[in-house]
Length: 425
Image (tube, rainbow, N blue to C red; front, side, top):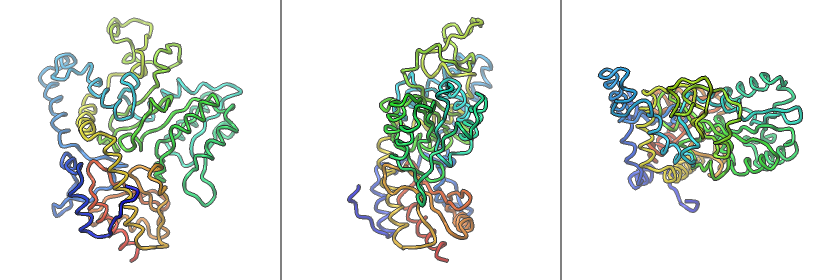
């Protein structure tokens, strides 16, 4: 792919699309329609993924079983509700590169982040700092600051925020490692995203984790923009914990159920402090309703309550497609598709916009973030009127994500052609 020669023509984009071995997966999703009935160019999967065509039937089955069985659906539904979340365990583990007992689907992302920080952020007077990236997604920063305050620490002294160098848009991995090595003895927790929501930069999991562990730090990741986007190997990289949502690249629906990863090293640490709930209690004795909490070994032990079956049903519809397509193949297509979009955008030099996402494929996923110097919101709105859907982040960023499951090379061409025309005018 690195030596591939692209062409900035519609016929070339059509050829790439017709030769794409994963192109048929597009037909497994509902593509939003324009007023005239044609399919939109939907490049917003980094914000909300599209609906799998089987999702309605999967929800419908659970509604029928609820109607027919009432409470007995917990044990006698066609997919009994008591263990329903286990239908997603193996596919989730494959998606993030984990062992089955290291993952569970539950709650929402920030809830899971708080639950895992309750266990893995254990500050001491000597080691109390948390390191995050500057311009983190606000919910992550809110959660981290609230945890610091909850433990009695002043964020002004205990929060380390890594920024890019002056004049740069991405944080260099060597700068992260240097900061960890210099201040690591005071750092309790390192929490980075897999991909920064704003810039689209993908971070180096193995190097951050290695540097953190070498300095005695716990290392966690927010995979909101990484799960279903990057080819992950959380177990191999020895990450301590990770959390993610499902409504972006995983197509789990608006507000869909989230997930988490807890490394096997912590699976049997029953003395770890945690906020407990009955769904995390030993399955064999859960309904004896005893007073003492006995956690399920592994990530399931962090569950609180029984999950929404309807939300799980939607996610199951999408995860079955991921299992068929395989994240490694999707990642390879994504690298090529995003490279093609970058190629198209750079054919005409312009001082009106800048791609702030790293050009190195190893430092990005499906997203390109475009900084527009003037009238950026108007450009985004004008594209939307033409049925080209991306999104805007203040003050000056348009985010575009050609998602390999349902976007084509022709989508990339249509966006680039219209975007460059809008910017020029």
